[in-house]
Length: 438
Picture (tube, rainbow, N blue to C red):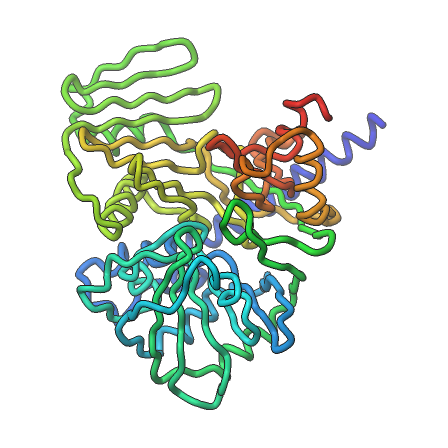
């Protein structure tokens, strides 16, 4: 056993060395390796910032309902399916948003209709944010309208004019849009070529549509090298003051920086978490688009936004936006208690909570895929453990952020179910352990 552990450690270190070599090649050959993210059609001044925003505010799920009414969650490991569809939809011409004949009574009939494809956001976005991501010109009166589901009707695919619904799963209302210059042939081609097709249904859970995997789900395990943000760099970037104006003190496992006026930076070295408060600015804006845009600006203050970062959650009541890392279409949990980055735009100032660690380079892995139970099995386990269904808000397949036992610079992403209850996400095992079931 001891010799086996030595062999495994040597293999892991070898993989790390190989990945570092590839990372160096990538970093020193940006023109060759880095995808061109400059949008030549964008009219805004800062095209780099706009492009980053459009990448972060992309849908995270693609749900295809075939002509028989059977639903599948589609993905493509070799080529990002959402981005494939975006490249097609960018060439379409969206019209005005008109209130759709959608009610609480017929909402599930609408989203479950046959011969459709839905691009789903995990939380509400505005029409303007969607327009930025999909390069659509949105009329001023429509820009603040919110939704999280883009439902494309695939009927009459030879026609260049058709209908798209922009729907809100929370309010069960939405808008109907007439689309011109559509190219459904390219959409169907991308859908048909998606290699991963998981059978699902969408059923109400506390009134909102919940993806139910009909069968066991096989999810690939991953290991990543991570990079760590330097405390001095964070202080210089966020405090925006001459270093001589900033005081610091140690408190337990934390270092606290203060500029004496408006900004405080706390770095917990044990947990690898950061809390930043900036009271030099106030927020009076309550509209959806500025809230999401301004939270992204706060996210950008951390430096380059990781390519796998996605918008995850928005709470208008406490003015909070959460961003998470995504791998193969699944969100990463357990990195922090709140998400990868949490931004609060309060009337008195801004708050940022985040981790000093980020996923950097995926490592080669020969691990077999994890097999997770069906969603109904998970729900039944929770109910049998004594939890009330009315308290279960969401059930989500995701990755657990776990430090590798052989190398602290490596993170293992372990597939598992996560459940939202009592305003917090915890793994299924954690919820069951709290009741003594596990």
